[in-house]
Image (cartoon, rainbow, N blue to C red; front, side, top):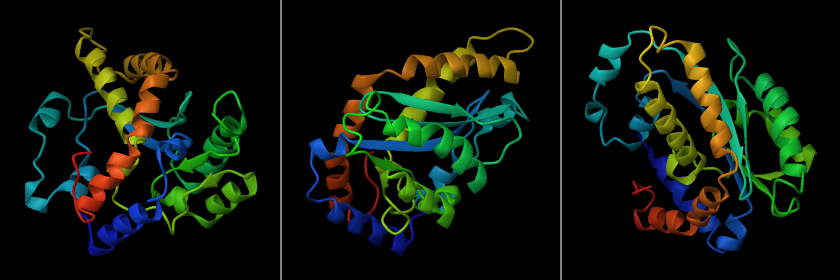
Length: 238
């Protein structure tokens, strides 16, 4: 659930970006990581952010009944107004700072955002990630600064704000599409990691060039920030 500090930081962030318009937000490169399950698992972290009380968070009986120990695959994605990149987490690897800096930032994100083929203007790109520990680490912040990639650092990004990271929307689309494919599986291995990986990769390939989707999400930022201000830092429809 949002703390008083979260709410204050959200209002501050909206005021901080008050002078930005759609032409500024179109240069954002939102990113986030997700776990995609054979059977959709409730996002308890987001439930805690948006609920009014812990008692409002219901146990997902369907999830528990269908698959007691479902397989899942970790996925990182980042997109610009032009293109999306994605990284499927190595089996057994942890989203710790060292993994994030080497396999995500150094090998994927920094080269991606530095290439004029992937961004509208490499000099205007602003990398947007949430307040995950791997992103807040000093070593991560220093790596991004040394790379020349502009970004919202840990003193700027407000915690508990999934509505302000439009990568969450792409993640939801991804999970919806994968879940619909998994539901239509009828073989004995329908809940296997191999089947999940097949569908996940196919959907990611379909999404990576959805330029209209990416532009629409980035252009939604002025309305999102306005909604947060009108809610005094509280819940929004996003």
